[in-house]
Image 1: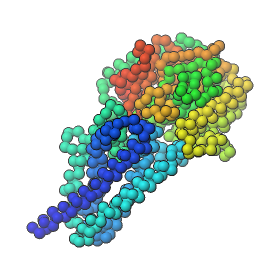
Image 2 (image 1 turned 60 degrees about the horizontal axis):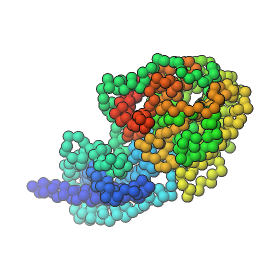
Image 3 (image 1 turned 135 degrees about the horizontal axis):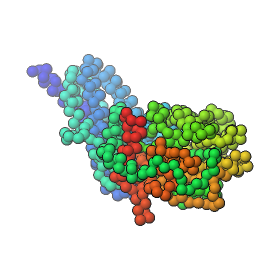
Image 4 (image 1 turned 135 degrees about the vertical axis):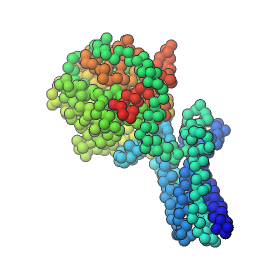
Length: 613
């Protein structure tokens, strides 16, 4: 009887102990949610305080679940380390929580900037970039580092002071009594499963459990970033998790939508023949070239005068949208016609990459010399594997440039990459197929002559970086037009993806994906500016280009010939937690949500699904 009484007393001490910890973490989450609103005041400043309060209220549901996760280890520690002296017990326990504070402070601080740049809370999408720490650090250099470090420091020091005060009652209890009785924390720990799963209902908690508004950013603010990160990591462990998320309709429905948008996949002819046979091809993939900075395409922040001048004598595709939001997705779309899906990239799967169709491979089969030029690290995001599989005979990367060229934190400045292309083309046997990928307009916008004033708005830095790449393009054009190969060359300029800057566009905003595509060069048979207004995507580039050479494109299953009047103009793009399929209806651009979901399923089944491709 005495032992049973002691056990209940120990359990009661444990419950009080856990309540103190729970209160501590709930306050921590609450404060960081307020910091989140302040940090992103440009997004949330226009919302009523009552809506922000609702976000906090609804977010408590996920916060409680996350706190329950954080209480499990203390419960096990309480139960199984009963033989330790109270002082030793508290030292180990406090050290564990101080390290946990550091980790959570880092995660919550990083989440502030990830949300600003990527449009979603921190999740497993960061993992591929952690393999390349130098590039990750360079990418974050345009962020307000001092402010973020201050937030991170305060997120550790202030809670630490409260932690000491909050634990004084626990220390007194442990000193006045024996160590916790063996197993006394097991039953209360088991009960933590209830708040972890969000209650006793049939379906456990998910992200939508805290959603309350039609405004996506309000729903996102109700999310707990640590919960989102852990959930996405657990999903990634399950190789079938994406299958469950993206495959939700019948195959018949997905096939029907696909047939609607690609009715003539066997056709190789083009109703508009503009390119000379055996022409050289130079594809310039421009980092983050949103149409918003290109005046000739209607951009509100014109920053590319050379590109604007060039468009006056070129073939302009004015309604093209990027299929995704990352370079690896854009390159796969341009060179392989693979649509993006929100939560992964085909480049991350070498075994699937080897089975894709590739433009450079087709050109190599027709006797073309193929070269890929990039000023950065070819290993980044599995790029090297993809480009080798794609059929590029020569890969030019960061190691092929002198130290004087490597002023950029990412690698060689664009001017040196353009110069390298001229050098190679001068001696290369024609015909050739070159792909040049720029990088100077990537964060942190580290370009020659820029002092990097931290007070300068990031929008201004973004536009200046594009102006720099535009100047590099202007120099390259002047030299290329003097070369022997220019008159027999088609030059294509297209973005790898759009960008939220300038204007801080959210990831669901269609303007974020609007990009220019421009064809020019001596092998292009047009006398003046020509507009192609058909709605299209990066994935349409393979079929459109191959049609000009009379070569089949049926292996590029998600690519339409933009010169074919019988094809249906549309554009699909996907982001982390959504997708869109744009079509013109009565001269207005509309998003067909159900069609987008079916299209996404078909694309996912074709390229990504477990056991496919």
